[in-house]
Each structure stands twice: as structure tokens, then as C-alpha cells.
Image 1 (tube, rainbow, N blue to C red):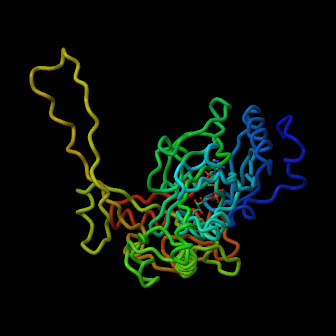
Image 2 (cartoon, helix red, strand yellow):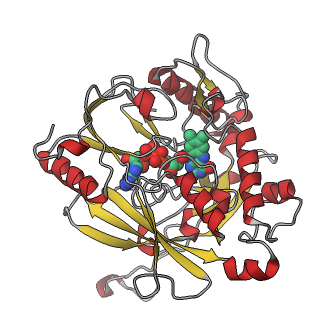
Image 3 (cartoon, helix red, strand yellow):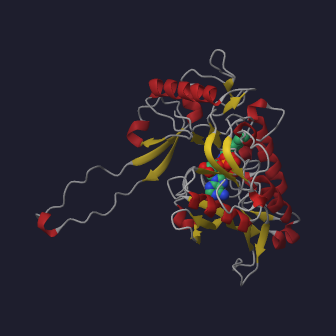
Length: 395
Ligand SMILES: Cc1cc2nc3c(=O)[nH]c(=O)nc-3n(C[C@H](O)[C@H](O)[C@H](O)COP(=O)(O)OP(=O)(O)OC[C@H]3O[C@@H](n4cnc5c(N)ncnc54)[C@H](O)[C@@H]3O)c2cc1C
């Protein structure tokens, strides 16, 4: 155990296995586990472990992490801080009367936060109902679902920087938030102590309309389930209930009694390919154009300029998102599929989730993931990329 970590954050007794700490329910033991429950203890624990030179990793709800059967030979810092504070105008609060700003501790369970905001009549997170995990992890892959993303509401994070050991505020615009990614996933190393969100305060409006309304529904399947058009607004509670029902039918809410939810959610991200490559896909393959990618300005040194500009290396590439679920299904892998003798299976409800049907090992999950990748690559020439953090597992 690194020196000077207060006893209150050190895990007493035998550390649990990752199988007990992650929703995939696989993985061996960490060498050490710290479980700080206040912001100051969390920061101190991180600084102490970083200063010790020990291997370390952060864990929130463990719903996007898959660890190998040998466990982790280092210190796990499990973020258990709780609390939601409304920031008052003049003290970092929202400037507009119909907005509310919240500061949320990193360990606050995400769905508790969403339930709280819906109950308060604050809109902006309702379509993100039912996503497991902690609030501190939410910017890491810019969580998203049913037409909303964290980036729609995120103002800034309070960040403890691993490089400098300093605490700093990072504005959302500097976090390079994109589809299931952010600077935090791409190498910005450190700890999200808290996140700051700005939501729409619909309470004044609700006193006139009779109920607090959601942000405009942005996802066709959700609109259909609610019996409205895309762009309509519906009561916040109704939207949350509808999202939870849709997610439940796909095994995408945690349910101890449903092995299809013993997963890391979507195991693969939807591949983003060039427009030209997307044209090689069968006509039936779903695709969503993502707009143009501008080529950066190029500076040509004067002594290399002969009166004509150089021919650009490439024409600006237009990018297209493909459906990983469609690629998997059409490479011959169907729901419920498993390799002979394996306890890791494709979810019975959704081909994008790899599940632990009971007692699976991390090795079995890895074998299944590699099999799926191999099938999709040989069928369509696309290498699917894993969405969760893999610790000690190579695909
Ligand atoms: C059934 C199911 C459904 C899901 N549905 C969705 C969905 O619809 N949309 C979606 O986007 N995701 C979804 N996920 C994935 C997952 O819930 C989210 O990515 C979630 O934000 C992970 O939170 P966590 O606390 O469990 O993260 P963990 O698995 O504990 O950690 C994930 C990563 O974040 C890092 N991390 C954790 N806490 C911090 C912190 N405080 N500071 C810095 N880094 C930190 C970890 O080191 C790790 O790299 C789903 C997962 C499951 C199991």
C-alpha cells in the first residue's frame, strides 16, 4: 500500500475480484483497492498512488471495463464520492433564468442523477436514463443514447491532472468530445473529481403547461414508442419511462436476474469509415453520413513556393458511420451465439453486447470478441474496435 493513504480509504480485508466490481462479471483480483468516499480523500488517494510510482487504474461502476482473469497488479482507486450541488447564480450558476447548473461528484451513480433531474423538472439528461456507471466516467466516452449525449449538457469538469498533480477546471469545448470518445479516452491522464452540467429548468413553463417537458425527442425509435413525431416534447417522466422500457427490452439496463445485462453494454463501437469505403458495403447496410472533414490550412515556406500551390494530398474525406450490430448479424453471428463450450455469449436481445451467461472467464469473453471481429473483418473488411476499457486483454 502506498504510504500516507489515510486508513479511511484503504479497503479493509481481502480486495474483491473484478468479477464483483464490473458489470461483465469477469476478472481476477486487484493487488490493492482504495475506496475514497469524499472529494478530498479521493484527490489525496490519487496523488499518493501516483507519487508512489505504483501501477494504478480508476474504477467507477465498472460498466465499461473488462479485466483479465489474472486481475491487475497495481492499485485500483474506486470512486465512491456522492453529491449533487445546485450552483447559485453569481457563484458559477446559470446566467439565464430557465437554466440550472449542477456540480456533481464523480462517484454519483449516473442514473440516480438522471432520476433526480427528471423529478426536479430539469431537462437535458432524460434520454440518457438507464445508462449504468458513475458520473465521473460519463465524459470519458461522452455517453450517449436515444438522441442525447453528455456533450449537450456538459459545461466543464474538475480534473486532477496526473501529469502535474494540479487540480484544474477543463471546459467541455477543450475535451474533444465526440462519438463515444473524448480527450480523456485519448490520452489525457487524470481523475474527474466532479462534472458541471447545465440543464433546462422547465418548472416555470410547467406551471403554465401543467407538466415538465423533455428536450425535443431526437430519435425515431423513441418517438415511435411515445407515439409522437421527432422534434416533439413530451412529459419528462414519460420520456424516461419509455427509454427505460426500450433499454430493458434490449438488455441495456442492469438487471441482476437477466444474464443478458451481465455485459459492458455495446462491446464494439459503430465503425466510422470514408464515404468511398462505405460504398463497398451492401446496399442494405445502414449508414449515417457524418459531414465533411476539412483539410487543415497548409503553410508553404516561401523557398518552396513556385507560383502554384501543391496538389492536396487527398480530397477532403467525407465520413460515414456504419452499424456494428448490422455488420455482426450479417457476418453470420446471431443473437445468443456462443463458441462451443464457452459461457460468454452474444446477448439474446442485441448482437452488439457480449454477455457473461454465468461463470464465464475473461478469456472466454476475449475469444468471443476476437471471433466476432474476425467474422466481420473477413466478410466486410472492417475491424471492429472495442468500446470498453480492456485491462490485460488483447483483441
Ligand atoms: C447494460 C449496459 C448498458 C450501457 N449503455 C450505454 C449507453 O447507452 N451509452 C453509453 O454511452 N454507454 C453505455 N454503457 C457503457 C457504460 O455504462 C458507460 O460508459 C459509463 O459511463 C461507464 O461508467 P462506469 O463508472 O461504470 O465506468 P468504469 O467502467 O468504472 O470506467 C470506464 C472508464 O472510465 C474511467 N473512469 C472511471 N471513473 C473515472 C473518473 N472519475 N475520472 C476519470 N476516469 C474515470 C476508467 O478508468 C475507465 O477507463 C452501458 C453499459 C452497460 C453495462
